[in-house]
Amino acid sequence: MSPYLTLTGNTWQLHTTNVQTVLLFEVPHFGLDQCLLSCQAQLKTKNLQGRAFLKMRELRLAAAPAR
Image 1 (cartoon, rainbow, N blue to C red):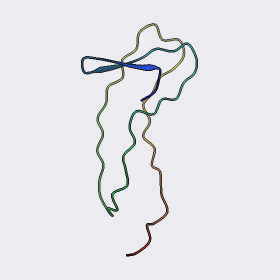
Image 2 (image 1 turned 60 degrees about the vertical axis):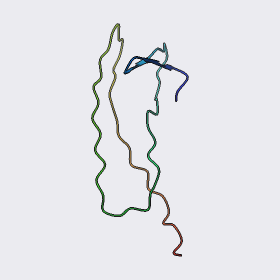
Image 3 (image 1 turned 120 degrees about the vertical axis):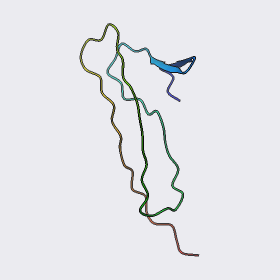
Image 4 (image 1 turned 135 degrees about the horizontal axis):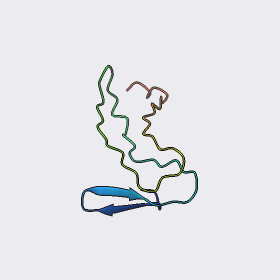
């Protein structure tokens, strides 16, 4: 987890004064094909100067060698 994040109850709080990209999750590759990953999130801000957004990124890995 990012050093900028703190966990309070079931809420993650991000405290920073700089532009920051924070990795929240990394899902391991299980060797599955044609599957669907679903994600749900809410973004709330307080005293925000600038912009904030959620982004989901796909990371394609090289295929695992056949056994």
